Length: 280
Image 1 (tube, helix red, strand yellow):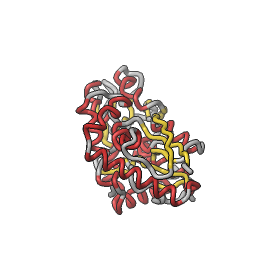
Image 2 (cartoon, helix red, strand yellow):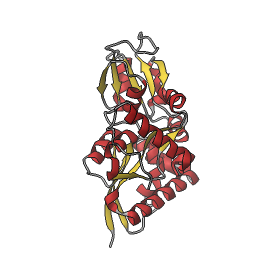
Image 3 (spheres, rainbow, N blue to C red):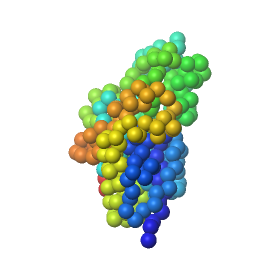
Image 4 (tube, rainbow, N blue to C red):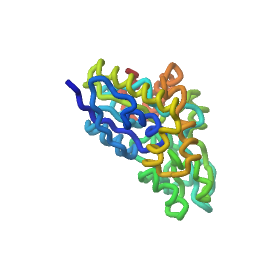
């Protein structure tokens, strides 16, 4: 009997690249039928928190809140060095830390790791407003906010909007934590059971390996869902966020998850009893 699962992935090029083979039937999971939802990362976070998905690309911040309900897949993560969100300044705003008290800062969602990272690294009081990630650059460029925490394709296109770089939050994280930065990964509901989760791990890794061996074949899927249509930007995104730790977290990835869990607890940004993120 085939088991039907609800799978959520983001529309970002690294995810559509990694899942292209599964989306197009080039790789098929054994005994499972996958129903895909492609959405903004914060929508995926909310749906996973609400128990509406069996497996999803989820911000590690949201996974800290989910706790023992889920486990992290060892493959499929966006994690590494030099991959962090950028804190950008609107035109004519000072591009320096700390930000002025009361500044309006846009962030890409309450449960995103980008929001958690900003709060970890900039404890001074500001007005933090959550908005869809794709709206941040246009609002900053139009002077409708002072600063913004920018993710995804914005990392490669912000200069075109006349913005200033205040800080690379990933670099600040690496200096403070001494580990790679864990942004998001695949998490599965533990209720699926170990055999189903193991088959999902096999299928996702096979899809990743297929994409790495047939890069150009993935481009149409990436273009169909991306915010930015430049092929150069799409490949820059894939080359940055699909790396050796996407195939397997390894000890570097596990150390990064432990560091994020510990620092979030120490700063009171998750509950004191929040467990460390656990890998399947």
